[in-house]
View 1 (spheres, rainbow, N blue to C red):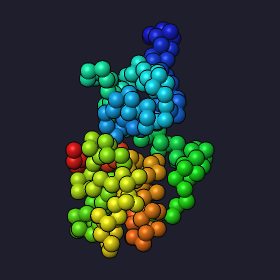
View 2 (view 1 turned 30 degrees about the vertical axis):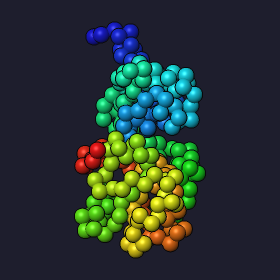
View 3 (view 1 turned 120 degrees about the horizontal axis):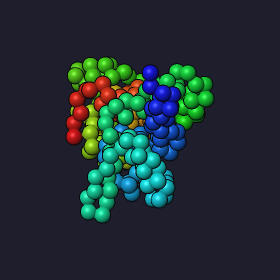
View 4 (view 1 turned 135 degrees about the vertical axis):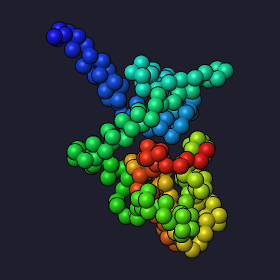
Length: 218
């Protein structure tokens, strides 16, 4: 039988992957990368980090094998090392929400009251096929360009109020964003309702849509 030292080394190697996830900011970077490849500078801006701090967090993720890089001129671009990394992040959120009261409290505080109508992926697909809804992607345009639900219009949340005329006054507008813990779709539905529109949101988002191996337009 193999010695205890070899077994301990194996479990420490597993732990190194877990340790890479043991930072809220690194998880935020993983969440952003689940939407598509980005430069270090773009990640730093989106996560509200200084460039050096973002680079340090990304190096930890890279050393754990969770992200990969490519260089284009002077810029370095990061991407998730595989869809299994995105699946691990989605499962971590799911387990946290199911078993941690602290996670659920924080999630409720961030997303706000449960006052927005939600559609499952199956419901959304059926209503899109029937032509019953207008679908809008309220993520930043860069994320939309990297991959979006077919038929969705790109209407970033910060442009929504100025682009209401582009949306039908009757019928239902459905908004979606990054994933089940993304606040953008919640805020979009509330903003649309405040302007007298009937609105709903996709219950999860682009991360879960990709993991379900559903069609993605680029």
